[in-house]
Length: 438
Image 1: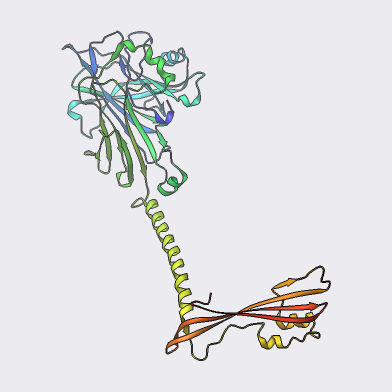
Image 2 (image 1 turned 60 degrees about the vertical axis):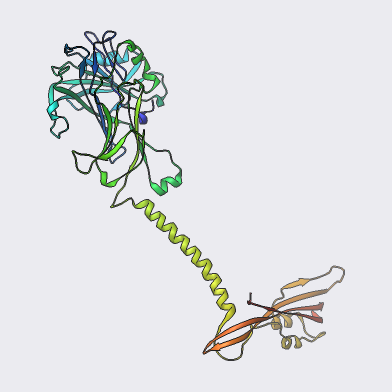
């Protein structure tokens, strides 16, 4: 079992004398075919806002006789596929418990004591605190030797006999913090950016968990105590319901609603099928957020919307600007074309046989192209290009004038040089009419 996906389940064994019996996620009797069942069973977990904090787990149960005789108080054990984070009662764990675990191929990682409580039936469903019993339960957390790290950590709890065991007027309660029950939901980086971290909390019943812990269950498989036909359930409580986002709940039989006992608390509940011994799992995908609302998806959506609108506006504005530039002119007077560096007037100043290369560059600027043939020796050809655009004005309203079309003239001058002096000038002029100057 992965430590982050440790399920919730109960296990018990009758330990009459020496610690020779153990349980594994179901109640187990000291002898085969016990004459009692277990019920009701309530397994609850509280999901903290800080996902790194331990999850507080509460287990409530009692013994139900198959016949009319009340079962005698008996020593029980509870195997939990997870690591108990801290003790809830003073004192060291029973050394026999630690020895028992280590004698079966496991290594202890922590131990201590847990507070044991009892609640009368008249107090069920109320916020009245349970009565603390004078005895406490011993626990030990362990890993299996030579098993890979992903096999996870388990915990074994020994529960001493109390007068309330088997008394239908009472139920017993054991609470403890567990590590590793919350894991991040697998997601892509885009989902993490858009929605933030989402968590998974799984609560299960009847699941052995990791195969590394199966020998503890297998040793007493013939003495399993079945659930009584009473109302039992697993549940998860979320104390900060105003900042909670639940994305998915499995299975569909689970129900979600606000707590009827505590304000601002939301619960997800799954009734246990007491007729089926198969593992039953309640899984909740959720996330807590800060602020008045879950701002990350909203702000990112608004940002993408604004970015998309700005991009569209830039595209449209570019087309509109091009249309305005092509069809409208502002100002009065005769239309003036763009300056041209190779106008006929300038070209007339070029005198073949006299104008030098330096004078040509001062008059027309650097050439756009230069061609030279190897066989021609010192001869070369300089190419100048220019475009003249003139709007044909239409309707005028004040300073605003429409443009009917554009007259475009493209000039190309080929100036042949022999050595350092101009030998000949050839001019090409191409005229066209267009709807825009581009």
